[in-house]
Amino acid sequence: MISGLLMFYASPVDKYNNLFFQAKITMLLLAALNIWLFLKTEYPAITEWGHETLPPTRVRLAGGAALTLWAAIIAAGRLIPYQQYWFN
Amino acid sequence: MSLLEICHSLEYLPVLIEMRSSPWIFPCIAILHLFGLVIIGGAVVVGDLHLLSYRLTPQLVDRIANDMERLLIIGLLVMVVTGVPLFMCFATKYYYLTPFWIKLFSLILVVIFTFTIRRNALTKYRKNTVVKKMIALTSLSLWTSVALSGRLIGFP
Image 1 (spheres, helix red, strand yellow):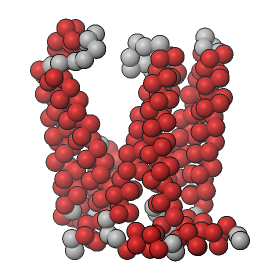
Image 2 (image 1 turned 135 degrees about the vertical axis):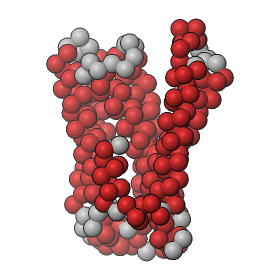
Image 3 (image 1 turned 30 degrees about the vertical axis):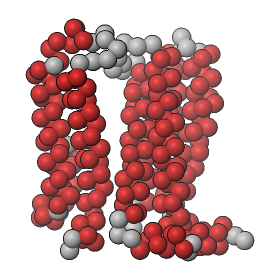
Image 4 (image 1 turned 180 degrees about the horizontal axis):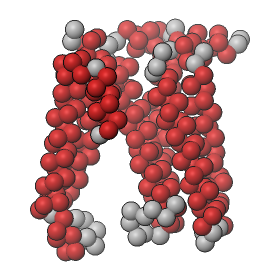
């Protein structure tokens, strides 16, 4: 967060107008929401499913969503410099 | 034929010229390359922090080391398979970049270290905390060198 804020501060207007940056921040918020929902709904019952070989579907869905969102966040972050080639 | 001439001829292969002229092939391969580094990063951080006694899970060191190696191999495969075409795209430029050579040298060193010294030492000295910490610190330093020099390649 600290390093990200510093990088944003280096060129806030450019970043704000960058589609990939906007997508990255949106997905970052979704990833945070996913973790919050997981901690609120599934995690309190971890003693019930923690030792099972296959966790419940909702837990696996939360894990899948986290992996997908973080992969997309990395991809969007890597594409930030390409906005000028693709869209301008 | 010198190394520079080899780099030059690699860069001007028809498929590489095509790749450079496409606005999306290079960034897509670069994203996959980053995924490889992230997989390696996750495996290394979990494995080495475990050796440094910062345990995320109460599992045995052996079990963590095995899981880590499996992920590491997957990450390395992704990184090498995507890294070769990325290098070939701008081979002449990379030839003159010191961070590229530091990255390559660190990568070779850390791969040799992980699959020889690290693997043997963890079997031989599984109860020796000092050895385990030294292994973890060496591994973390070498991987940090790979990541940092890789990032520096992108700067003019």
